Length: 86
Image (cartoon, rainbow, N blue to C red):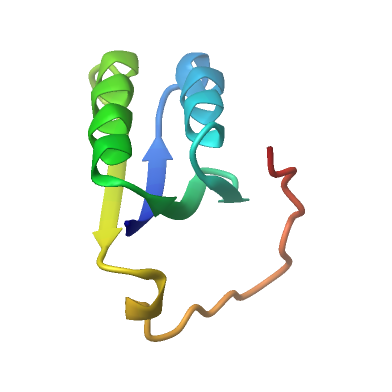
């Protein structure tokens, strides 16, 4: 298992599809940020499916960490919105 953080900046027309796919695998932590633990095969599948959804000028960054414990600290500033986790 790896700990994955996904951030995206995509056209509003594709946001719902990208968000819907990410919600199937990860926890929604901020408007365009998801995180959680995935297997290597889940990461491969997610990359492939996300690549199918995006177009020019869209951007998705996937950070893959060895584990959640490899994060030294997580600092949140400002108000935290509550996102419904599926």
